[in-house]
Image 1 (tube, rainbow over the protein chains, first blue to last red):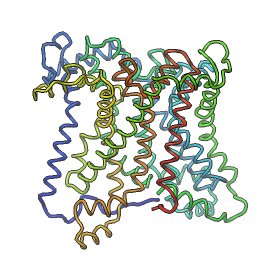
Image 2 (image 1 turned 90 degrees about the vertical axis):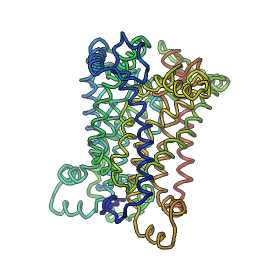
Image 3 (image 1 turned 30 degrees about the vertical axis):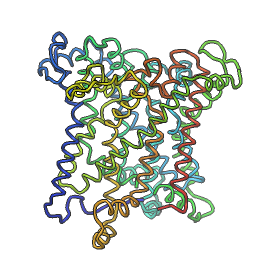
Amino acid sequence: MTTISTSPPVARRRPFSMSVLLRQILLAVMGLIWLLPVYLLLANASKRPEVFGDYSIWQFGDLGGLVSNMADAWGRGRLSLGILSTALYAISGPALAVIIGAAAGFAIVALRLRNGFFWFVLIFASTIFPLQMILMPLFIGYAQTGLYNSRVGMILVYTVIAVPFSAFVMRNFFSGIAHQVFEAAVMDGASAWRIFWRIYLPMSAPALVAIFILQATFIWNDLLLGLTLSQSETVRPVIAALSALQSTYGGSAMSTVLAGGLLVSLPTVVLFLATQRAFTRGLSLGQF
Amino acid sequence: MTAPAARREEMLPQRKSRNAFALPSVGFIAPAVLLAGIVLYLPFLYTTYISFTDYNGLGDPEWVGLANYVQMFSDPGLVNSLVNTLYWVAGTIILPVGLGLFLAVLSHGLPGATFFRLPFLIPYALSGVAVGVIWSFVLQTNGALSQIVGFFGADAPRWLLDAPLNTFVMIVASSWQGAGVNALLFGIGLQSIPKEPLEAAKVDGASGFTMFRTMTWPMLAPLTTVVVGLSIVGSLKTFDIVWGMTKGGPGGVSETLALTMYKETFITNDYGLGAAVAVFLTVVTVLASVLYLRRQLAPERSV
């Protein structure tokens, strides 16, 4: 069901009022409380390890300290080794999943697959399984097929994990496209393949982008699959490396661990905030 | 709104008895079904089988019937994990969902709403491990929170060491991370509510909380169903943040079912018992989802 609200939310005829100001103040205060842990992260990631104990935890270190701690986590903490693989997984996994999920939605909605709803439920229901339930068999299966600790294996599992959600959103999104669009294209002699690539996919760009961002964030931040299915530092995703950094460094070099946490979070924070609008638009078109 | 739409789609009469696109339609759905079948369903079946065996990863699984399940239910540790998991479910419905709704209603239609929502979205993009790092820093003995409490002259509790307090503070940490995205979803829902009924109610003299309770809340129901449903399923599987902060400790008191399952399988190498916990967790999740969705999407209530 597609509901496109035509008037932007802010453009209401509302005179300046006390209640607006009160709401803004309340939101601002809550926002500051919300940012407090982020401030603590920044403040303590910027203290040089050797003087860490001399400061109160509320004090900020210095910018040079932040940079050197990040460099430390990046180099000695070995975060650099996993970053390229992680980027590869976080881009190719959702990209493949979006296409596969869209193809499933297309088969059900546009091509009117027989028992389409059953197949849809079958695909979507797999999100109910706790990830932990499939870890051990995947580990055994990966070990036997040589996929263990390989980039192909990691891309495969990250793609599959993202398929049900993209099928879910894309099926809903395609339901909002009039079936006449499809019929008209058939009249013009287009094949199903062509209609999918040339008409349905381009029409659904906002939804595709929204799914991609959400799943890329999820994959970038995944710990469990990376921990279970990979081992070497160049294949293992960066979050698993961060987790290892946390347990080996412990309390002695807290600032390095915090700087590492900050460093690996930067790409997703930037991606998420930069695309917030597109993201909201895509989901509002897709889900409801 | 999802389910009724789907139902309608099914009730549409087939226009032609033979669909000209029968073959392509199979081809288009095949990749999704095959991948989910091989990578998700097959492991699921294998785990179910392993839960009836004694297996340590080496040699062959030995069939032991229900022994793992008997052992699991007679273990006080499992009851503890179950209780903690229920805390997580209840806490996740109350805190991040409630806060998300509150933030969305508060910022809806407000000048600069995007800007005001920003602080709440930053934590969502952080990884569970990074969140664990920050919050263990906040909550450690003599950490930031203890200092705040001490500033007001009170003795700080041992946040992460005593149960069930450690589970509660971790729920707060996870709410800190999750409230923003719920606010985003509720914000989308609020935008899609038609304006006319609200204007009419305003003319009739409704305002503030009455307006919210009688008009906005019922119209938000389909979205609330989705958000609460996702929260239930997500919270039953809580792993990352607990792993990052306490590893389930001390002594397993803050373990959730997901953690127990992981520890039994990959640390104790008792694959059979770990699989039994996994099956139990799946059954609980499926039951919760079905019960919840049946209640929410019952035909007479469809919106």
